[in-house]
Structures are given as C-alpha cells and as structure tokens.
Image (cartoon, rainbow, N blue to C red):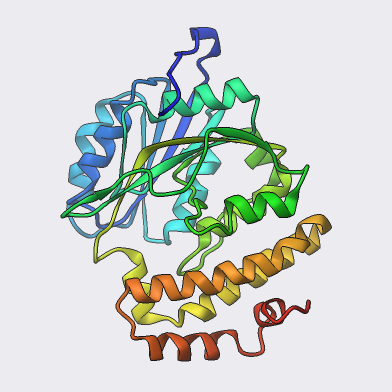
Length: 312
C-alpha cells in the first residue's frame, strides 16, 4: 500500500524543476506533458528542451507553452545528455526531477515524493515504476519497500540492496533530487550511447547522506521498439559502452577520493555484465552474439579485472 499523501502547507511547498528533453517524439509528447502539468503538486517549473527534433514535436509542444510554468528551449541536436545539462543550468526550483518524453506520470507522483523527502529529511526520494507495454502493464516492477536509508552507514550494503539487486531502480526519472546538492557537486551528464543516467546517479551517491523510497509505482515507463536501447544495441557493442561508463565512474570516485565507494566497484562490474545480457536480449541479440559482445567489449578493460576479483 502506498503512503497517504499529506499536502505540505504553502510555506512548505517548494518549487520542482522538471526537465524534459525531447527528440522526435510527436506521438508521445502530448501524453507526457499532460501528465506533468496536471500533477496534484502544482508548484512546478517545467523545462522542455527540444533537442533538434525533425518531426512535429515542436508543434505538439507549442500549445503547452501558454502555461506560465513552462520554459521552452528549442536547440540544435546535441544529444540527450547535453539537453539535460541545459535544463540543470537554468533550473530555479528547490527540487529537480527528470522525465523521458515518451513516458508519463501518475498524477500524484510529485506530491508523494515531496511528502516523502520532507518527512524523512532526505537528500533524494525514489519511487517505484510501472512497465507499460502496448499489450499489458507490469505494476510496481522494482522490489522496493517504504523506507529511509542512511547510505553512508553501510555503503556496500546499500549498493547491494538497492543498486545491484535483481530488479534495480537506478533511473533518473524515478527520483526527486535536492537541486542544491546537484549544483554544488558539479555532477553533470556525460555523453554516452547508454547508461549516462545511471552514471549520473552513481557519481552523485557520495554527495548524499539519506535516501527515502516509496514502494508505489508512480512513474510509467513506456516500452517501445524504437526506443534508444534497440538503436544502441544495433550500432554499438553494448559491453564496450558499459566498460566505458564503468571507467568514467571509477575515475570520478578516485579523482575526488571517494575511497569508501571503491569497495562497491566489483558489484557494479557484475551489474554491468548483467545489464549487457538483459538489454542485448531485449534488443533481440542471440546468445552467441551476446557472449562474443562481452568477450570483445570487456577484454583488457578495468571492468574485467573487477569481475575476476582484482582491482585496477
């Protein structure tokens, strides 16, 4: 059962900046924006970054710009990571949230997240999500309990339970962040074909103290065959992409001397391997292709050393 919503008073009703990058999503953007602007939590700054769409995405967005909460940025194509960084740069809300433009929200999502983060005095609130297929829906997919966790009390245990679990929830769109923590940390999105969102979250972890979780599925994650994962799997070696992202995380933690977090890198390496198999199968690759992908992509890379029990 989800937590009962208790709307904060106006004095405790901080603004949420919602960043929505979009590229050629004319079929989905209306549903997405309606679900954001119709939230029961109304103190929003909705930052739409149209990243050089060549279809009718702009025309679909235009009617929503009449809402004075909407800030519309139309820019040349630079990739989703760059678009999200533009949104972070102009955000003025006390909290920050991200939405993918082909997904949509349960209308009480931000009410619930603000209630949870305020009640727990947490740095970040995380909700569960639903997998939306054209033929069926999987409700509250990730295995989550209602709880607040001090992540620095047991770094390894936190990562094992919440990041490397059978059904992890490492997405940026299921979270409500405190904006000042992101801006003070200097963490931004890096341009990778895949896993740039999980890299962002893992780089941010050492800057956080407490995270609170909501078991209720409040974000609707739409599964479409034209989504990025299928494109990436057909154009790139997924294992190479994950090895590159792994190197970036290791380098960041070492550069800023987040040495306690280095102990979870073997777990992160394992979860990267699992993700390669999961997403490759989702994209239709055969088992032999996936094995060859892993052998080629992880060979002579730091991630392989961690998988084999060593370090770099």
